Image: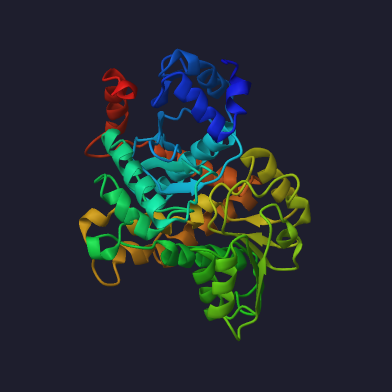
Length: 439
């Protein structure tokens, strides 16, 4: 089997079977800037690399994509490196279920690129990357012993990449999982405070989303958040604290939903007595999009704003923490714009997770000014001021907000680290030269 479409359409377990039959334990795809194409570690995988080279929407010159078949539980570990100009690629590791290999890889590359732009807009000297561990449905992924083994093995995988990617906590991964990652690598953040880390990044992330909402409300001259109805998709790490911050701002009602019954139960219990409606929904349920509200806030998975869901929206504003909310930044961003919905780009407003953890090695102070400046209205590059700048420019030159934010972020992302230069790229070259995939 070598056809790219056949390979990419395989289920995770069939793809792992294919790799095992071909004696492939580790493999990679790296971008050749001279040729402008992707190169695979193994000849039999080159059709996939060729497909990446043809797809200019999501595969945008990613410096490297590295994969490993885990031992005991047959899961696929991935590390996606988009850009390392500003520093090592930084971004969390997602633990999620995918129907086929294409969806898995496409999610990884989109998330990695999003981290490049997010880190650049936040002024961080980090590049963009993402980790993704793919579920094996034959195992109980909530079993503590299973998770411990998976994440320790993932940590060792990250160590083998020699520092081109630094991992962290993300969707499906818990802070206690990061202890196991940390046991296998030094190249991680978001470890628990008792081990010198910053812990859960969800609370500052939720605060940052509120700043983005306030910017949009002010820009549209809608007063304040007080008295507004907000629809929150996702009542997990970010959605639950976000609801609390919104109630503090005086919102009149929150309509929330989640696919996880534990999250729905926690939200109901935490905000008992508040005007919040918490729904348990199926993974493909889209009813939240059609709610009457001022702000629709996506805080779960990405690619949820598309040709099917955008026409359902009744909100004036879209602002949330989910990564890559637009399925297609060009076409879906255009439809939102033409529909008159103000979109606050996700990589602008959800920066605080990475801001909170990226520089753990520099230590901690109370009410850290390096953190708090992102929430202020005084600092030029704060979330509020950055959002206002993008919204005003969008109105002034009649262009989509995502397009403007992306242009600013792209320019910033190409600035090399002032001390280490483009070191991440050199690390990747070294991995290829040393035949990482065979070691």
